Amino acid sequence: MTWIDLMKALGSEFQKLRPGKISARESFLGRVNSLARAERQNSPRLDDILRNYIKTQKWPELQPNDLFFLRERYRFAYEYAGIASITLNHPRQMLRNPGPKSTEDAAILEFLLVDVWNRTGVRNWLAPLHRMQEVQRQPGKSHPGSALA
Image (cartoon, rainbow, N blue to C red; front, side):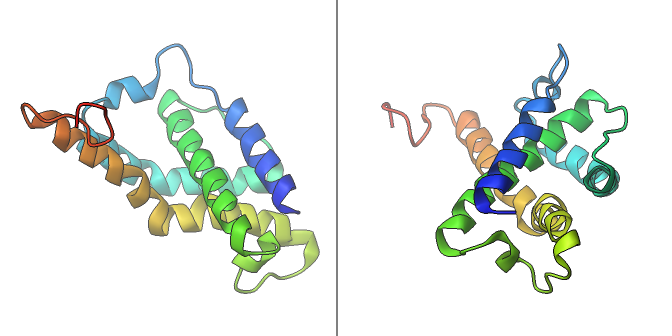
């Protein structure tokens, strides 16, 4: 699997994981602590769902919250892979023990969607949301990136 193959696979799956009519994001909007708690509670189950999907290429029936959190993992993995591709020649260089070629692609996907997400991805995903929530709670303050700052 090349970087291009990896980015296409992640982007394609991200597009397929469309939330239903009522987005889970709407239910968490402005409530970052609720979002963090829900992610933490669902994480082990989503890890298992992802590991199984990587092996079988079949999704079980997914709930709206599942779709929301899986899409966020795929978005993060896509961005992480894009950054890693600048310094690494091949995706297998992200793995400590790449193993046989036949299992390498699955190991790369699991590394990005489960291991990296659980180690740093979820924190990096939530940090700007926490900051935006803090700014919104401060009267008279605008978002640091806005023209009004």
